[in-house]
Image (cartoon, rainbow over all chains, first blue to last red; front, side):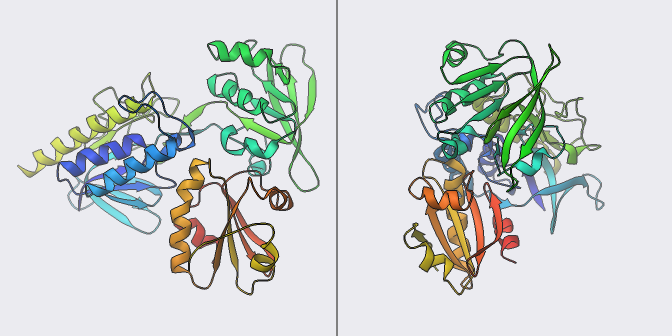
Length: 309
Length: 102
């Protein structure tokens, strides 16, 4: 029986792990994919208090090693379901493909995932020209034409980054002006090889004979016309969404799928806490994820201690 | 077995002509998920003597990347008798590597 099972090994989950392990809780962190979360893709973090500059990889690895060295167990296993334990009815059971873990408390820290394009067949192009990370995959499109979808800060940063490598960079946004703020938005619009397509949305992706991206068709919502852009790469920067489907019916969520909780990180289910980007909140930053990790952990520790006395 | 770093010059002898299945990790030094995958690949190599595990740095081996349509890093490909058997783009957990080589 664990005291705390934490679902997700990003900044929120691992920060919670640190607090739980230091309080001598029997702590398990489960991660379905790669520890570290979204921040792994950031080449540089420069807004974390006390750390002037660090790569996302180094930061995540430090966090992972710190959590582990304090005694938390970290396993790569995808959680499928969380349900009430039938033994006492007061504990929880965290279910993965092959194992089940009984625990007094659960901290959900599943973060966010990239929003995927919602046109039929689009996902078959992942790894064949459709990417969610310009800094990771941009170098493979040197001298080629690419398209970026989105109008926020990520989309603009991606277009800027790609314009250094690529021949032409199309920037397609569903609104008439970019949502991104600051000088980068102006700079990108002034770049010689960046072409902005306002009020346009993705209609379809076309493949070459090897199944790789050869072009995209976009619809202009204002004049009603369709345009075909010959591109080898598509970079989606249309935001991020929670992936809390497995907790439906267990904890309350809002319409967008965020787990409802305020700064105290308490969910609608007793003994389940939530930390980081996957809960309802206004500011989603590394520091707020770490902060949530501490708050959720202390709440879980108090619950465990109350149960012991 | 240790993970060997190879390049396009020894590709034929190391991969194409290898009797064993070969798992190739195409990676870039500047890519976070690739760095995450590094220790996973090494542990896999240590525990799977029946499979040869090698790494290819994509920046320095662009011909190989073009030949095998590498468009994302990391990309992991299992070769059998020199032919592509299974491929996976992005970070691969130990379970994913096991599934690929089953």
